Length: 107
Image (cartoon, rainbow, N blue to C red):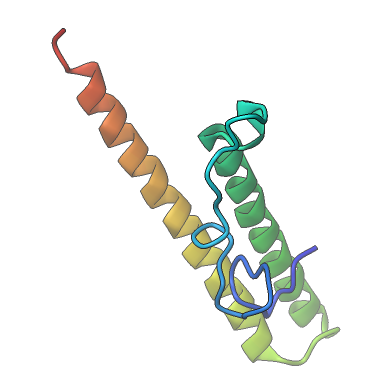
């Protein structure tokens, strides 16, 4: 489970190192492509967005039930989940635009 109050995608020693940006590596020419392909990277990021949304919901439920009293933590978790989801929607939109352009190419 991810930390509901830490930075989005926090992976590493510095708090502002986002795995989706700095953590990507070039595919290994000798390793199998399916481990580092775009498809798997996209699936992993979708999983992280889902985890952030579940954490935000759990935080809101705990606040509503009185098990938490920090509204700031709840709001931060909700904003992080919303920002991650909006980024995912933008990636999807760009992919669909690129697909439509490729589909319209004449060979």
